[in-house]
Length: 206
Image (cartoon, rainbow, N blue to C red):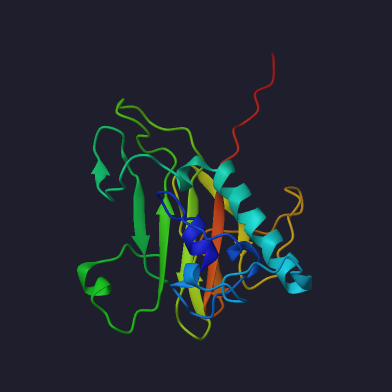
């Protein structure tokens, strides 16, 4: 839930204490409670510290990749002039979502490709931001998701999988996955991948 919130467009609204698991036990009128319901216990323990570190990692990724916090509404429409879509919604088979897919009551997993080459402002020119792929699985079981091929990229680098231990990966040791690879997305999880651009050929001086 925290990853879904912090990787969404717009301004994330987080209540103080959410970052380490504080709860009001479902009470939405806590300002009238002068007791444990409204107090903040700063002795957060190991679980609270781990969650706090996880939230810090999410906010770091949000700062690092502007495509996660754009000021323009996403349209998912093909831009003929720039030859790119700002976002593309994908099925687990890496196919673009159709109206039938959107109305399929059994569908539980979806991906969204956020293309950093899309127009970033009112000026009609290509953006230069990174391209990201977010995958959300609301199903209780594993879903095999095919990582899509993207023009101008060579493979995908995993930035986060909410079902794995949350440790910052060294870019040199980061897990990378080829186009067409089936990734096992565990139940109730969110993943974020970074598109690595294709290598440019090196030219030798003659």
